[in-house]
Image 1 (tube, one colour):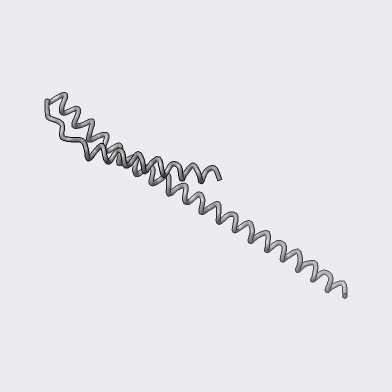
Image 2: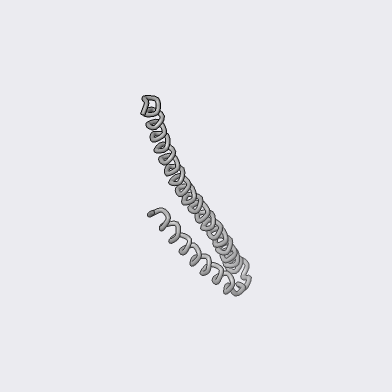
Length: 104
C-alpha cells in the first residue's frame, strides 16, 4: 500500500467518525428541541386555563360586589364553580407533565 493510499484510508476513517459524531449531535439536539417545544406548549396551555380561571373569579367577584353594594341577588354559581374545578384539574395534570419533562 502506498503512502497516498494510507493517507486516503486514514482521512476516510477520520471523516466517517466525524460524520457519525455530527449525526449523533444533531439527533441529540433534535430530541432536546422537541422537549423544549413540548414544555412551551404545556406552559401555554397552563396559561390559557389560568386566564379562564381568572375570568371566572372575576365574574364571581363582580356578582358578589353587586350583591353587597346594590343588593342584587347573586345568580347560581354552579357553572362557574364547575369551570374552576375542571380548570384546576387540567392545570394540575399539565403541571405534572411539565414536571416530568423538566426532570428528564
